[in-house]
Image (cartoon, rainbow, N blue to C red; front, side):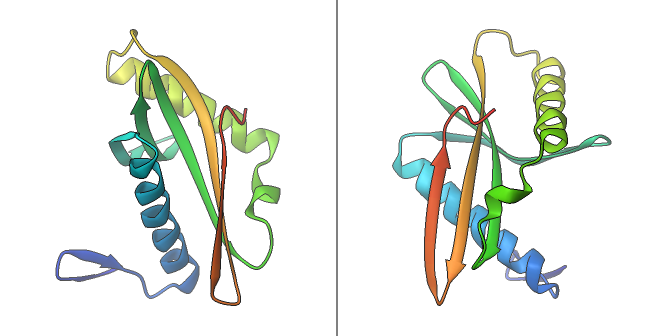
Length: 124
């Protein structure tokens, strides 16, 4: 990971693509009226890409970014369960009980220079 002017740059092309996807997801969510609460929440058990809020919902967003193939194929049952557990840990650690948790997936596919974003609300 290399820092340029305070911005993250990655020497790993897949990681760089992931950072680009997360940036796009944040921009999209803000335009949709979501408030970004936290990015890249990390604990020993794993990482939540984005935590956002809209109304009474606290939304845990998994961002999947790939070149040309659908990133949704990576959303296995085990991955969904791990994200659910991380969401529960987040709620407990932050002492949040007044918001309804929800789990979304944003899938971004770059194909021939074009980006396609899919937002699956309440995905699992």
